[in-house]
Image (cartoon, rainbow, N blue to C red; front, top):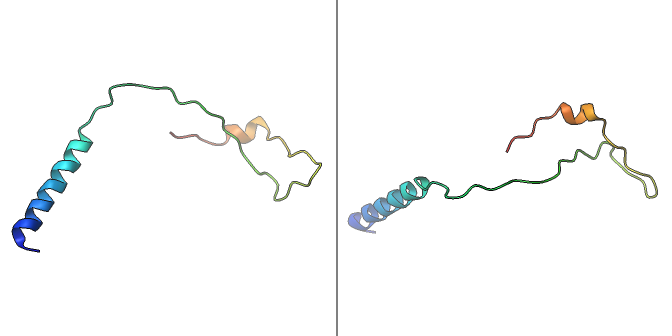
Length: 65
């Protein structure tokens, strides 16, 4: 490629990058979901219920969004 085309391409890339970073969200939303921990045992056999983690197991972890 010739140098002017490369320079123009880089300029366009930089301008697009800056314009996409400058956008401010117009709306706020709500994030909902469930947090599960497991499996706590390597194998859960058919017919057996998986163990329920104690509250301390959840409290020992941090959720970052």
